[in-house]
Image 1 (cartoon, helix red, strand yellow):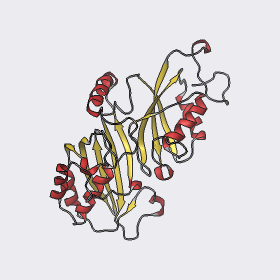
Image 2: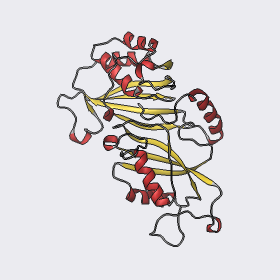
Image 3: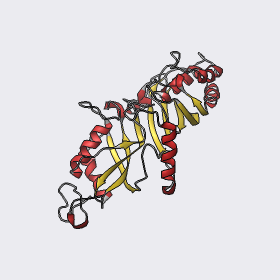
Image 4: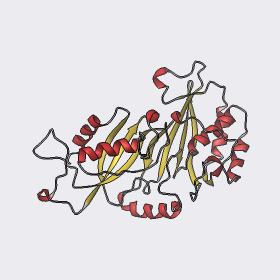
Length: 296
């Protein structure tokens, strides 16, 4: 939103005749952040969170309260290069690029809004999502992690069997109840469809690629922790698959450290398919508490 006369002042709504707005407009945000110094995504009174910082900045710049809906509520310490959120605001943001530059001055260096896009009212960052893509990185180097990478790569100086890890990961693909890998929340389903779970090694750096329609709290890091145990030879691929028969959180699964995890992309359907996707997701995920915080 821009004022046509004041190029240096606050970004304020402009509309037909400058009168009060009777309709709102929806905008998608593509966001990147270093989660190290945030207590997760979800707003919490008196605590520094990604959502709290962004909402405060946008509310100040746009001069009206802004509330964000996000694709995935990342937990404390988890990063994102492809997070997506949306908000509704009165009036039209006529110069998104200018607003991006304004936000860069208002926001701290560990969070950035990379794109602002006008979207249909049917677009919902959470319920319209087809799948989320995460990457988890760790290093097997004996010296640890290069100082320039230490905030996003976990030191894991152990010998690993990558073939066994890939075997175990492949057994977890598909639609399953991942209760053994999730921290339980009352009324929340733990049924998820994992569509990709693979590993790549380049030198000492090992990366897990994990994609699913959705994730429950601590799921990605628990999956990684379980497969790391297989890679070290402490567990077998068959043990990993057997965990799918467990209906409670397994104490034998170690949750990998948060700072190795990043949300890298969220996929959405074409505009004409958004409403149908929203209905389908709400039917499947209707028991998830809307106030649940923490993911992956």
